[in-house]
Image (cartoon, rainbow, N blue to C red; front, side):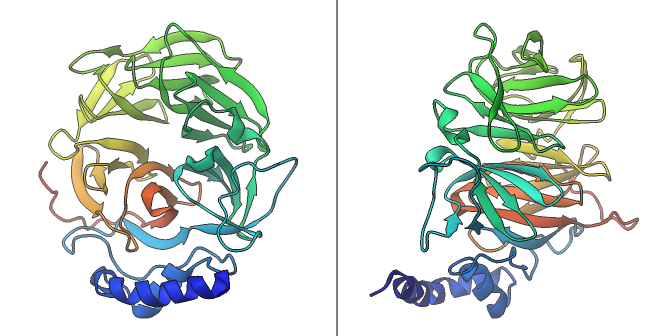
Length: 359
């Protein structure tokens, strides 16, 4: 039996078994078929998703619009055998364990922990290019990603105690290290205003500030309990002059000034294991929670919606490891164990808001 026929036969058996669960998520049979078979033969545009993944009494803040699981191979430069992640034909790349995503315009960078693959995905022609030898640089599994507007990007190497800065084609431009202060980098951002690179350390529980050339300058925060202190940082993000830090053992989300001054915290009674945080143009904060595979949305510090939940259906997750809000108001979610990037449209703000959910 050919590999193609084997795959079709497998889907013919397995899809009916899971159909009742998927239908419970509010999707039509046609949408589910497209969703399940997306990319099995020809890589296609992220498949539209039908249905809701929120409580009916909560505002519609995110609308599921697509999923990225595969793409047509579009190699650039010398790639060798780096992170092929292939099933099916040699022209198809399939994501195996995506852990980070980010980008601008029609180009998204995807970090896949399996085989340490780093890919460039084109949203128009749905191609994926392996970025040179970038994946071979890491001592352990990569994690954390920040993409600049020119599509150069930073990726953390926790085992190697370093952060790599690549050009848009995956060539190493610089390495950020500080053996005294950087033990296990877990996330990284670039601050255009100060021209500085901020790296969150999950062991020392502080944020190391480098200049763009790689010279360590200072640290934000200290290990400990209470405002402005951390015990297990999981992610960082910066919006305007505010730095947001998530922590799985201390205050779940803290907002700080860039000098480390504490502003406020939130989510103490709503979040257990936050993994990523982004902020939209309406000043709503989205925080993913590993404990129940949800995305919780806050307006200022008030919880207004809990989205998602555990599962493989559209709009549900199995280990959210990263989120990226694009310049065209699309939220990309690295749904790692479901082997996909889910795509959501951010719904415009409305004056009619329901009663806030208590924390």
